[in-house]
Every structure is written in C-alpha cells, then in structure tokens.
Length: 133
Length: 133
Image (cartoon, rainbow over all chains, first blue to last red; front, side, top):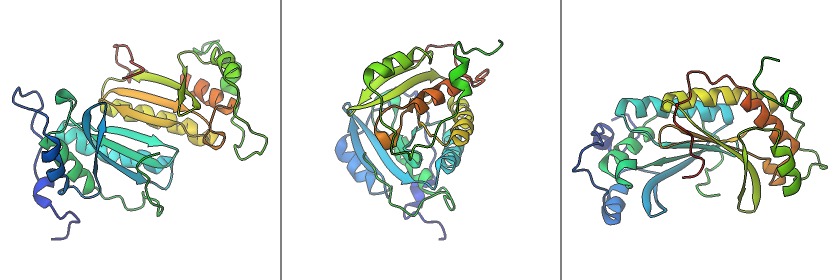
C-alpha cells in the first residue's frame, strides 16, 4: 500500500446525505474512539458543539488558498463542507463538523480522512503548525 | 465617478511596509473615525486586539473560494494579508488587522477599502450576511 493513511478503509468511504432524520451527533466517547482513525486531527468543543480540528502551516498566503482548492474538490465531491480559516497569512485551520446535527457524525471522520490523503507537497512550511493562537 | 466607493482616495492609496519601528496601533477613537471611510466594515475587539471585520454571504462554497482569490490578488499586491474565514459553507468573513502592532493601522483601512472595490457580481447570495454566529 503506497498511500500514507493507516486507515484506508475510512478514506475510501463516502459521506451520506445529511438530511436524514436518523442522523444524530455522536457522543464524545464515540468521537474519541473514531479520532484514532484520523491522524493529526483533534477534538474541540466550541459553544458545546464537538468539532474536528486540524492546523497546518503553509509556505505563504497563496499556497494557503491552493490548499483550500484541494479541500474544496473533496468537499464538493462529498457534498460535505468544512470551515476553512487562513489566519496570520500562513496558518491554515480546518474545522469539520455536521452543522445540521450540531456535532460530529461518521461523515466528518470520512472527510477528515480524505483531507489527510491530499497531496500537499510544495504547500507546507517546514515550521510546525500551531493549533491554537 | 463610476466606482462604488464613496471614498476613492483611500482605495487609491497603497499599504506601507509594516516593519517600520514608527508604526503603532491606532487608538479606538481614531479607528472609529476611520471606520466611516470603509462602508460595511465594523470594529471588533478580539483578545484586546482591534480588528476590522466584514461578512458576506456567498452563493456556495466554491464561490466563497473565488471571492478569496480576488482578495488574495489585492493582498499580494499590497503585501498585507487579511484573515480569511469560510464557515457554514457560504459565509465569508474577513478580519483585517496589522499583526505586527497587534491592532489597526492606516494599512488596514486601505486594504478594507480595496476589498470593497472588488467586483463580486455572481458570487454573492441574495440573503443577508450574518456577522456573528
């Protein structure tokens, strides 16, 4: 297996439509368990809403927007859209959550896994990303 | 005059390099006065740092990224980069401030005025933007 993800099964799945009545936000315990499948992501609780968060440091502002374009291609394909932030000119921060259930679903972990598989060569800075600032 | 800005003089200026030792954050009073020159923007105080903030609702996620590309062209030209946020798939939120002085300078109002002059036809939703959520 050539790809970098240790959890190929998750990144091979597709998001299911979020308009299902049966869709509920998962518990924090379930989220913590699923988190093991998406390297680099962390849980954050924002206004009592559980979200997946990851930060990257890019080489510059324009590279940050190139990163966003790669994420957008995945998001459009899945019909599931993360929150994108480009702050202090070279910090990309992404929050993935399911707005309709105000929390996390399997879809979010699928999207995070797919974002982890993006080819970011040439975009990232060698400096370490800072998640919180 | 065909352009939409009632303050053409500000949008015609260029940002000055921020590495000057003489550059200081302006007072809140000065900021409130300068705010009259940038229609649609508001002041926000975040962690004791004064920032210019404006929100737009775009038609969809991809249009939001097209918006970012237009902003990036201005930001690169000025060498002054705002914080960009695309949240809940169609809400573009932009913060403009001068990181090196942890506050606002004339540069920020110049950049805001230039962002106001961008041609956003075809990108914006007819729904009203929500600044805070």
